[in-house]
Length: 449
Image (tube, rainbow, N blue to C red; front, side, top):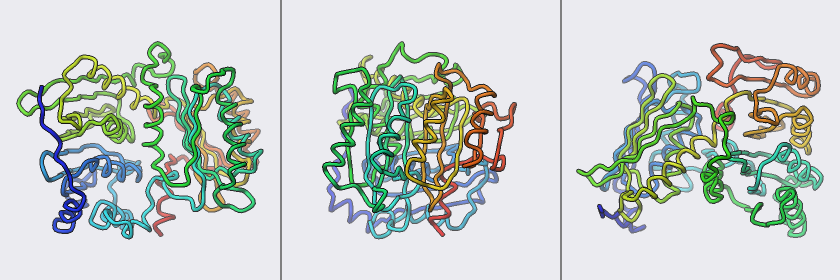
């Protein structure tokens, strides 16, 4: 068994190293015509790869290639990135944000005060209470959750919802409607928690089926959702997931081999490429206590090939079949959690208490099941994105979409999008918005202005 331990980092020495050798960041639009090259050279420290990937992912960049080397005391990384339209990153404010977030100022609290991280959507929302929920998924559950919050006069400022293997994980940011401040009344929080637990339990009496927690601080939503589902052991749902949920085109091929020369375990992932794939994989490896020393990321048409040279934090490689199988299952789950092949509904309306409850109720009444959702608030406007299927997991038919248009089209803007994989064959149907794709990162300019 290879035993090469991760070096101990003394906090004071690490801060001194950063001061003496501050991170160097380069944003280059001349080396490649079809992408922007972001280079980061920095003193190595645990978790730095996830930190860098997280920042790029929060900007909704597409990482087409990446080369990572962090064996020893220095971290060197090269990313080839584009925007969601496949173009170079040319906006001056965005480039300035990258340099500040990844550079020396990104390692100090003061330097990042004005830089929005993906703590709520892509930006932070003033005073709030964060609610975390996890339990067994069923059709209409999100509608019931949002109805409870509306009845208690809590406004949902932002939220992310993921489902996988019949489990649901939510992070919601709410504030008190009358005061627009965080909810700090223990009695109201207790009532909310009990009602939400009751809904999540459904017909089950076991308290382990549902869990809620409350936090007054910020958290990175995507990473937290991965952590919640990982702790819930959603990766063990073998036999539950059907081919309807994840078609063959999304079936990843994951292998774990041994690199004898350097004493690494090599994790290779081949699957259909998509946005935020690298973040999901690095996040899961980090949360499983594995350290990435080297990595090579590339995209070949619609498919991605990612290779990671890893060891456990104690310096050991993956030597048993049980360890390898667990890594493979966890990475498969991480890849599938964000997959939503089918239809997305993007709605924009003036924000108000009960808006999410009303929208999810309409979806439920039309027989739609929400597989993933994102809720964000910009000023007085609420932007909701729902990835939906019918109650049986099948694609949504045209009649249902037309019924939705008639019911909500007069009160809010609705954009209906096909999955990107089928976008070439079928143009996205639109009503009220132009035929463009919506991403939370597009809202970033409003906060950098």
